[in-house]
Amino acid sequence: MVTSKFDIADYLDSKEMIAEYLNTVLEEGDNADVINAIGHIAKAIGMTKIAEETGLSRPSLYKALSDGAKPQFGTILKILRAIGGQIQINPISS
Image (tube, rainbow, N blue to C red; front, side, top):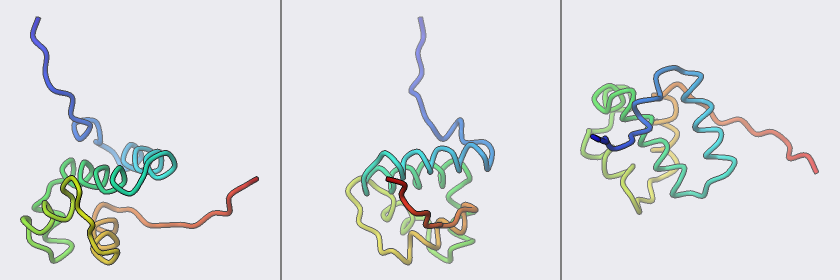
């Protein structure tokens, strides 16, 4: 039996899947999980394309989205825009 390594980026093939994935991580994860998820999404879309759209170099993107990274908020916003996302605040229901 041959197995292959699971890569979530292989399944992020539509805007809807990307939004659902990121919203779930935002709801249930911590800072590191969110950065990791954004990295998976960027990989699924293509780091070269994200680099072009953000004006960041590919090495800078990989560094900003690596395990343990603490990218600046402005960097995260640029990447979110490049992956077709936005931040929206909704009131938390009690």
